[in-house]
Image (cartoon, each protein chain N blue to C red):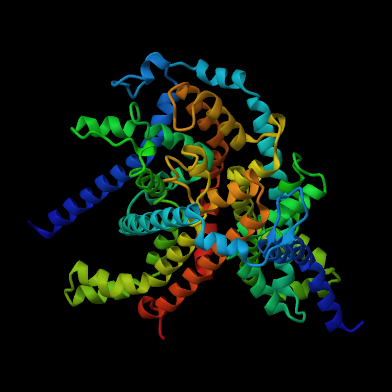
Length: 294
Length: 285
């Protein structure tokens, strides 16, 4: 056998676990899921082709779809905006050549290691209206805390606050690595010119960090659109569907009501929303993300 | 003020602020820890203290008595450790294939690997569920274990491939002249060199599986099969009420604390690998 052919065969052999996995668990299911999304499929009865009627019902005749989409948007905007700012802030602080950086970094990172279920239980307790630490602290400074998880108005802010517990996690570490990659000479030169900290931040730090910021925003939005465990555990989507997030609604349709066709259509809409948002951000990126030397 | 004093002042402020932020982020955990050692009369009162008095160690024993907690722990370990081994091994082979061999369509395949990271799992979850249902694997560990062996996850493949690329290929060539097979090269030469990267991948995979909730929720039905994530949930609905009712928060917190110990221990023991993995994930931009 020619060495080149031999190499090809070996290469395919090594990547074959991935090829098999991809066909069985990604490509095949994706095609099946498109097909199901055009079917009435109640699990026990074989799928029946119904054309686009699932999609029509979702868009024109499903209040909960709109509600869950809105809830998810609201949560995403809040948690990403505040979360990225928070992570950026911590990263900038840690980047001041701090002694004991490892200790602070571990303190900041630790919360994100808490398993999702434990985290939801823990925060459910913190948000407890009567005995929760948050409302108790608020009452000490004379504020009557809201009913948080029982309040249609405050339940999403509560989830956003909970998500901010993760500002010291992976996102901050990526931003910190980005900050540490900015050449010190630039700051030294700015110092010689007597530039103040705001100008340094505005014209050196932010432009050079923009690729990292862009990355954490894109991946953050994809992640936050998939919020599920917290609302499943803490509120079950309530009160009055005020914390019904998209994936929770999808999960219910699929695994509680066994409407596999309808849930597949919801899944594809989610996929298309995520792709659209991501592409839109890439398009926008040209305006504010700075890739060195271009 | 003299510049030195300004410097000293701003440095102190920085450290105070960092310590404050760190403490603020740790408060929820400390409060959970404190609650877990309290007796009910100290929990459901307006003046619940930070330091429990008395310290009720028995809460932790009670948790093990109230539920088959040991079984949950063992189940969690099974559906975490085996997939971690499978995913790491599988991702190593695939990454090696992508990093060291030339074959037709390689670049396209690699793009496909990368783009699968974008697909939300909800898109495939229903057909995958149906596959396992038809195999009669509902309420078994197989659906949570088998997929890990087939590819090991796009992110892990990507990460390991990046690390393979940092090792000079001359090393392989020299070994080949000495008569090593491609598998020998991987096993005897490259894997020892890649130990830090492999540790990183293994740790991140471990945490991911340990924390998984939706997978076990969909596939496991009977209490004896529950991992910690489902066990905690069961505990919460039976002893806590859905929106944090006021029944047994000390036990609920003790159970939660017990569930997070492995991740914390792993983090403290292998911090540098964590950080390395996360930083690498940011490099794919």
